[in-house]
Length: 485
Image (tube, helix red, strand yellow):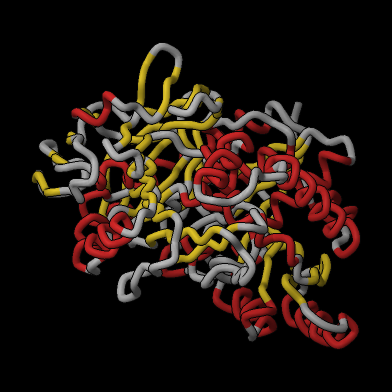
């Protein structure tokens, strides 16, 4: 089988590439095509565990779900997980290969292209259509040498490109036409069409804008796509999705404070809570105080536990959390957040940077050592209250101590996690807990709310169906298929 291929690049980051591919994956799947999503290089600390024992960006997991196919490491062969302002962990075909500073990574890219093309060919062999997502901006010509994410990949794979511009941020005509201007002619020739995304208002008012873009670029207009409001309920690609203040719900019975730390990871753990009508999720950043009327303080995963723990303390959140507990509140740490709750976090091998041991928050009588292979596995089990769950683990480190005698969960014949003696501080390595309706409902009741009536997974699929219908109405899918080769 030789699949058709179509690549979607953007005029910038966060112009809607990931959701575009997800919606089209569902739309073409509903038309009877076998679809595979592919992103040569992704940069995100929001990752998913694959069926073949690796990890990929969360956006590709959503796209695979839209296409109805199992997750594979080949859908995102290079994943960069930022650990500092200038460096990232490099994951190749699902496995950690090391760390690299930004400048060093530019020299690594040429050696990664064969692995990228190998994964791409594997997907092509098992699909009718491969939808490829670029990264960042197509116009980053300063990074064109050895590029594997945008035009470098498009040229190597002979993948025709559709360029996406975001009218919501302004200047969309200039951003699309300007991209054509700065690209080398052979790169610009790969672009066969354009889409203007996130339009609000009367489409007729932008007819002339579409004609201007077409005239100045020579590219085919594929469609003017109106803003899709339900996108807010789908898992976000990266931390840009956390910049919004969150949805205010004045009548909510439960307020949950989430600490937004610099290296927060796997923050899609928050999405099911945000979807609950009775829950107001408060995103609290350094410089703000944890509100005194919260029922739960939630510490999410972290790509750099020690650095985020330092930020937490410097912001005074440790004092706020202790005051929250004195008021009778609850604290839950997930993965890196669990590690922060203990007495110490040790990094003897320098996995996160300089080898060191730091004091934790001391709210759980446990100690963590960051060592050993990364654990990447889907899990099912029972929590401490006998409620079943499904989720996944993605972490480095071993946590031991007295409070593990009160485990958070049992997975198979092994116990996992810890609970404090007074029963109000919880730590677990399991991600995806709140996507499980039984678990989420139990937590809402524990925090003084009512049992949840939300079927979260069904809601995600319903929104993907609506997104596909949105694409069908406003984009020329026949034109996309004719461009794909």
